[in-house]
Amino acid sequence: MKIQKFKNTFMLSKTCGYAIRGILYVASKSDENKNIGIKEIAEALEVPQHFLGKIMQDLVRNGLLHSIKGPNGGFFADADTLNHPIIEVVKVVDGLSAFQKCALGLAHCSGQNPCPLHYQIKDFRDALYKTLCERKISDLKDDLLLGKIVVKN
Image 1: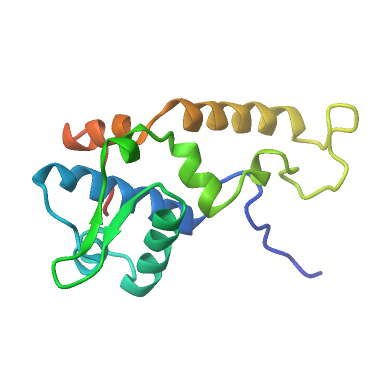
Image 2: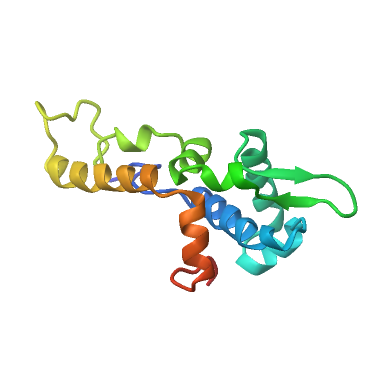
């Protein structure tokens, strides 16, 4: 019997976790009026620098974060960045299909044709989606600065 890994059925990917942690780290440091280099971010979050750099550039390309090139360059967050709901980061990195797929991988799972976990997973998935839509980057930044949440191990 071959066991397959399910990619992105209803949880956020590790890449998405890095993106959320990275944008929150930058947002928490942007009040200091300086650009945050990728090396600093990667070291602070204990994640691979090259991989995180690609993720952060995707956030920049999609208008969720800003960057400046050069010796004093780096990433920074502004009021526009802080106003985005977390679901926008998820959409850029993972897409939103995880909020519609069957957790067991069935192709035709629905309310009319439910899998064994359909209703329980649907409730969880809907609540997660709602939370990600309601919570803004600024909300999580504030929680981070107050010590209510952490972004590193």
